[in-house]
Length: 152
Image (tube, rainbow, N blue to C red; front, side, top):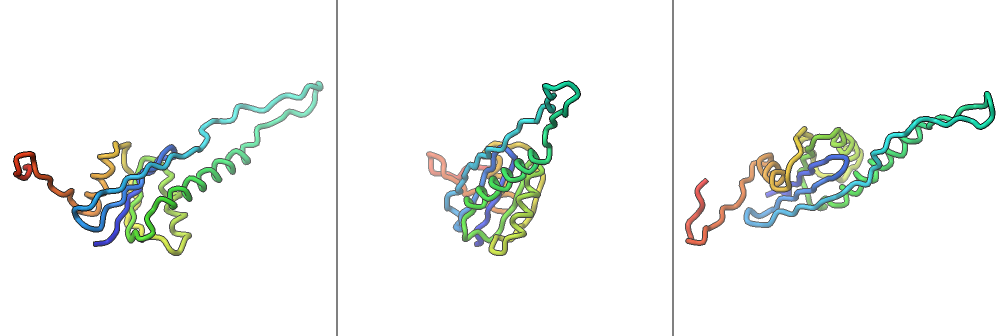
């Protein structure tokens, strides 16, 4: 079986879910927090001299700083991807998943992107189940305390 990974991405957090190669292995889930500023600039400032120049907020530098913070966040996510991963899916509610996709496509030695999918906010268990369903891999069945299999 191939090593498969799913990344749930929001611009606040990312969850990297790596499915095991063998059916009964353990799923690895890693949390990657972002430290992207979410503040919006207030207006400019006035000069103390009458009829003097007015200051302005430099929107361009604020956008450049945010872009650099996003790029750092995406690179931090890439560090958490297992190098032996062959297939990757990126999903989540934000538009950041497309930025991560662009960064992955620009690199040459990355896993094959199987999809970029819009998904809602989820719990960690829902994310793991979503990745399993995407790759069509069911969770291993467990025996109850009486020794019989659970019914689905």
